[in-house]
Amino acid sequence: MPYTVWGAFDKFRKDSVDIDPDITKRARASRDYLFDQLKILARENQGFPRLTGDYLSFGSFARKAKVQPLDHIDVLIIIKGNGTREIQSPRSYSTYWLEVTDKFSPLSIFTNEYGYVNSTKVLPYASFFS
Image (cartoon, rainbow, N blue to C red; front, top):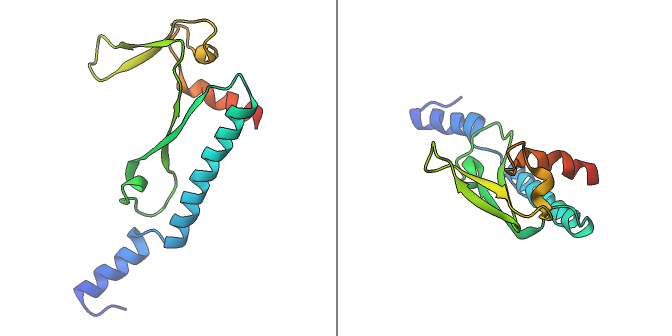
């Protein structure tokens, strides 16, 4: 039991805020393993969208600001947009849509009813090949 304010803060931070270094290490390894599996999936299945080879870690875990519990890690997988063009939303200057302009584009199977790429459609496709 801590007997000072600083001791109490240190105990609180350790018990309730800071993520254990071993958990952080396993989380990073898991994130990297996932990206490696996606690269294999893209290499072995011609219909899967081509990857640029990069991913972008963002969010609180990437900023080293994540607190307990570590329940997710934000990652953006970068895919090639061949056969598409971006369209700015008329309602928001910061919202863009990816319209498929070539029916042979690898992204054409991931479009919604308006012809725009819908990223949530990639996930079921990826699990089909795994």
